[in-house]
Length: 209
Image 1 (tube, rainbow, N blue to C red):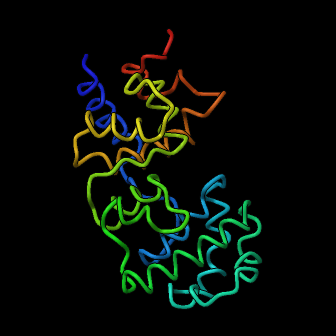
Image 2 (image 1 turned 135 degrees about the vertical axis):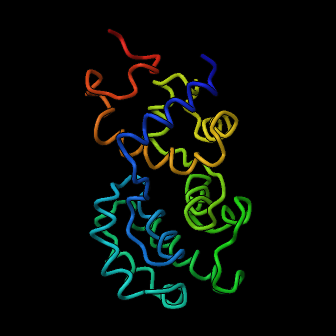
């Protein structure tokens, strides 16, 4: 079985267990999704979703957040961890979106990664979920599980992203990433995977009978 064939089979199997492939971060606008994704670094989506309602009520758009005091933003996001750097980045990205991009998120990886605190993982999420372009969000779940499956053989996020883009059907890549996250939380849990009940074991190179 080639990697492309394996990737296609994994896509099909994931659809069975996770028919609804959606981002787990709550946001009502593209800018709010950008903010939530930045907050999710080294933090669970569940924690971010507890924090963002009050944050978005106080700063609903880039216009309000661009004018915020960083210390005030820190108070809202303190429980997300690394709050000093995250607050600085949130205010900085709000100013950039407002002043440079006219309130519209950039629509390329290259431009998105010019925003403060935005790396390729965040940029790919925006490209996939906002602009509906083929994208691969190389988060910890994706890196770990695609290595276990034998789809990639590197832990480098950018290399994982680029390798998966070569073997995943472009129309499947966004949903594939969301489904892998769900699978990583439900079944392929780090250090305690439930391999016996895993729907992917027939195509997983790491599964041992």
